Length: 113
Image (cartoon, rainbow, N blue to C red; front, side, top):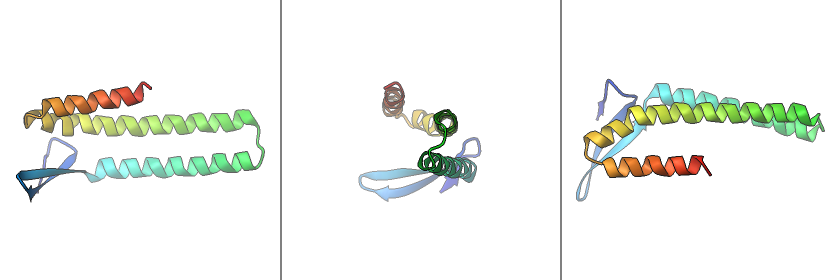
């Protein structure tokens, strides 16, 4: 197990036929930031549900849904930034360019649907 000092990930190597498998785990900074953002989003969604149940004004509810969308976008940006600066770099260095590029193309496609 080693921590790449220039990145935000923890690498763990596990023996697995026919070779070694690398498990990548988010370092505490990225993980804790993501969990905080998700807790905020969960709380916000609960508030929106209460607003709907309480027949609140539609414009007020929509303002809150927009805030949740922005919070999700910020979470995605943080995760993607961490991925680009760690997993992608590691993948390219290890000769897995096609796999890494394929994953990025898949993410791009999901984001543009």
